[in-house]
Image 1 (tube, rainbow, N blue to C red):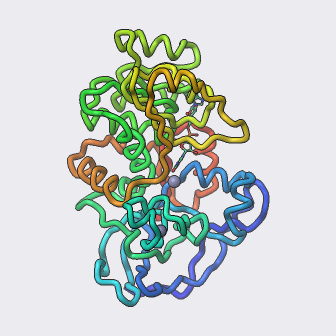
Image 2: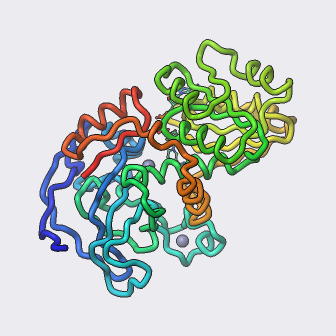
Length: 349
Ligand SMILES: NC(=O)c1ccc[n+]([C@@H]2O[C@H](COP(=O)([O-])OP(=O)(O)OC[C@H]3O[C@@H](n4cnc5c(N)ncnc54)[C@H](O)[C@@H]3O)[C@@H](O)[C@H]2O)c1
Ligand SMILES: [Zn+2]
Ligand SMILES: [Zn+2]
């Protein structure tokens, strides 16, 4: 396949809300150990919305002029020197945590929190572009026959699986707080992994609450409910075995801790904004809870679990992937994602 010299790519060019332009860049050349990917699909993540809004975190982390986008699937079209794991034509999906593979965290199997880590499409040029380069190890082979849009959402699906597997699932009662795209994947994956009961909780997003029922939630609760007492009612007064927090709301974190059974598990993927959550510590202590922060995906056990589920067709990606747009409609995709009237939004190339 002939690769062009230049490409048009969505680029954060101005330090303000919006501030994206489609501008010309050279098509990158794969360095030692890297592959060049021709993009097929890239999905929009909450992180992309932060970069769109240009909040304090974005200003500190994203250099102006960066091509963003990190949840992607594409085809290998060139190999850098030293790459033996990939061939031209391979379909791959991206793990966005770039690791050094030689620090103590990488050595112990926690490369997702590498001491020298960075994030593809945040700290480096990413995948809202027709071509990008990445370390070969981060380009994960895709289960055979998987649609590119379905392959592109493995970053958030992997987040969901990493979070729920922080506690028991098979035969367990699981509560998913926050039914954004990641929470929806968590509801669906918890059912696929054999949860006895899954309770989905949102605040007021009825579109997503309905979707949660569709993908397997046994009970869905919202702002009109006393969350903790409804969860106790549904679990013979015990509380759930495994509470997972995907909303970013301090109230939801507190609900998680108050409605988990004695000796149970609370797994938190959420990132909290300006307001530091007020954690009911005595509940946590006297209920003997295991509280765990979750970041990224385990490299590579989360990917292995995810591939098994995708290969079996156990994840209803079609239901959660509610919108697909051509990449030319990037701005509309961002606005749709911001509105919350959607599950996952994917841009196709
Ligand atoms: N740690 C990581 O590696 C990592 C990676 C990706 C995303 N995240 C974080 O995970 C979270 C989920 O991401 P997303 O894109 O699915 O989120 P999202 O913002 O699209 O969805 C959050 C949902 O929570 C709901 N909500 C608000 N208040 C609530 C409450 N009190 N109780 C229950 N639900 C409530 C909202 O209505 C919304 O539907 C975000 O906080 C995001 O920043 C963390
Ligand atoms: Zn993401
Ligand atoms: Zn490392």
